[in-house]
Length: 132
Image (cartoon, rainbow, N blue to C red; front, side):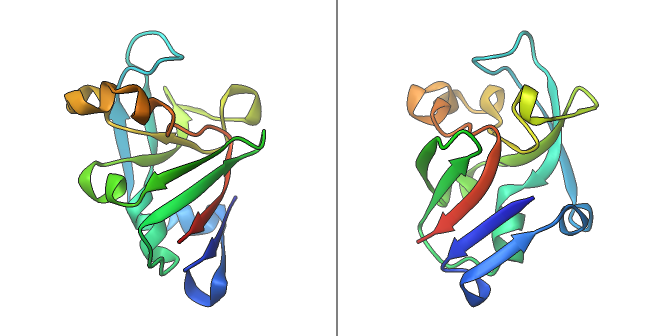
């Protein structure tokens, strides 16, 4: 489901659905710039995914299915409970609705996260992370 390259175990780690199912799941109810209200998102903490892959870096370059690419400081994942969401309001995310993985920040829990620079980091259709 997710490919990690760069400063990870062996230079390449493929995260499967079984890997994600084996991690602790979290929920975040938060507003977004592209949905109504406060959907409930369910997924795995980004920092847990990075730990699983043995990531050792300061920045991840996130890539989406549609080739959107952005650098995200790994400190975001330490400072905030950012999740790799697989569900929104109990429904599995698909590529048609921003899935199968969507990076979700707990926007409503921290005022600073309403800044547009964080909005750019909400990568949907996430397929790869390059750690550097």
